[in-house]
Structures are given as structure tokens and as C-alpha cells.
Length: 222
Image 1 (cartoon, rainbow, N blue to C red):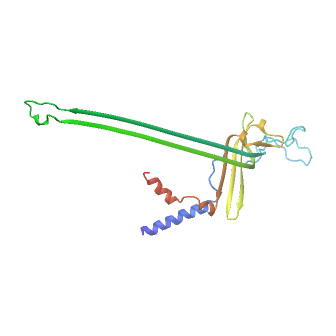
Image 2: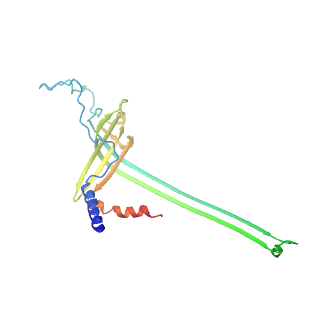
Image 3: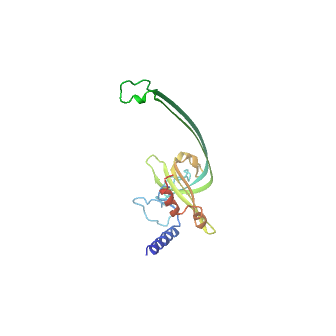
């Protein structure tokens, strides 16, 4: 009975994992927003000019309202290196003895000598290196306008390739002054930027350690 229950539980967990087609994300939510409807907006009356939807004649088309879109040029190129080493040593010694004992119950200990010493040493070294290169473009949506005019943007691009899906996600805070007249901004000029590149499908699953193996690794002392 116990074996049957274990098998059923394993199949249930596998089924839940198979149903999850969209990997979790840490980008700002939601990843899209509709334009806000202004209070007192009059219905369309068929005229070319609509007071609630017009923009000044000499105003460019850069994003500035919730629901507007903006193109992010991904130009991330970072590298980091770290190296460290340490060494320490310590030594100590002690000696003592009993020369003469007269008229004492322990006179047989006369001539006893004692020597002790300890030595310890430690050497450690470590090194780490990381390189990251991410280029491309993604168009995101303004999901919130801060009181100071900065724009919180978020968006996702999903690409289906054969039996798997690729997800490119981006979110962050954009200063409108950095947005060009072509309505684009460099990712290096975005504050609190969160960039993700994830995949789903059996090709991606084959590169991930199974949950049972991860469970036993957590139980190992080292």
C-alpha cells in the first residue's frame, strides 16, 4: 500500500510540473496595462477631433501615459572577477618536570619530565568570475506613472520554438528625459531593471535537476 501511495504521489507531482507552462517571474506586475479612462470622458461623436484623445500638434509620440508602449534596447554587458587567499599558522610548546621529591608518598615520580607542543596551519584560496552579455530589443508597456513623471514599464516577449517556449521579460523605471524621439531607451538607463530569459518544455526540463534529487541534496551534511 505504501508503495502504491508513493507512486501516485510521484505521478501527481509530475503532472503538476507538466501543467506549468509559464515559468515564474520576478519582474514587476502586471506585464501589460490598458490606457486609463479619464473621468468625464465623452463618447465618440464621429468627429475627427476628439478633445479627450488629442495631443498637442508639436508634441512628440514618446510614452508618457499608462498603456503607452516604449521600446527597450537590451545592451547588457557585465563582467566581474574576484580572487582571495588567506594563510595562518600557529605553534606552541611547553615542557616541565619533577626533579626531587623527599618524604612524600609520590616520591617515585622524581625525575618525571613532560613535553608538549602544538602546531596548526591554514591555507585557503578562492576565485570567482562571471560574464553576462544580453543584446536585443523588447517593447514594453507603461503600467504606472509616478508622481515625479517617471514611468514604470513591464513587458514580455514569448517565442515558440519547436517543442519549447522562450520567454524574454523586462521591467524597470524609466526617466522620460532618457527616451529618444523614436520612443526608445537603453536598458542601461533604466532604474530597478529586471531582465529575464527563461524557457519551458522538455528541452529546458532536461537541464534542471529533479525535485527528488534536490531533496536528497538538502539532507546531505556537505
